Image (tube, rainbow, N blue to C red; front, side):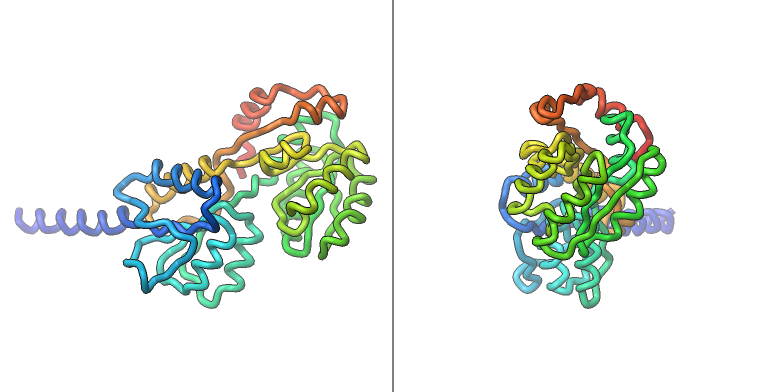
Length: 297
């Protein structure tokens, strides 16, 4: 009996050590999106996990050890990796290409996983088909930072009976000429996260050029839809915070492989739709069809 009790106690102690712990949350800055993410993460942590501290830097000598590091933003991941920690890292609120580039730059990264900002290619292609039942060609502009995005989107478009047309740029000066060439050959421009192409300085002229060619833009953030994209499919910081909290509560610091966002939102700019003379399906109905269409991978 005593032996059984000791065995159960040992199991309990080991179980607690694996499935409960403290988190260092490293954020790129103190702006509203990161505060939203932090609040959502904290709210959705279970199984004994808690945020020990939140900072925009990782100073191992100044802080007690933690069981898991969660980073929010590309810069935060680089900060964490530069500290050369032994602690596993869950990276969030960053594009897939930024995550992979940061790992390449790191000298000896620990166990690292991620929840990307990028929506899966099949999800995007399904949205395009729902928005435009007769659509035949989609334009995709990428930079030298993210050419790996082309292959999955090409495959996803084929499944929806569409052709993917692409242009690749390596500098800001090449963006508008490449965009004009792309818009002349395609019916819609699909915008995906790429810091070189979709920067604060380039978004306005890009949207103006697309409007001049009478080509709708499908974006990747609510801000892009507000700026003039016809629609945007994206995940909010709160949604990614919920996913991160659930993932940590389930797996602890034994992180699973990187993955796209599970939850997502849809915004349609009705003013832009009216300007293009488009009668689009209801936003709520579109989102519901996406959620039930089996395009999560």
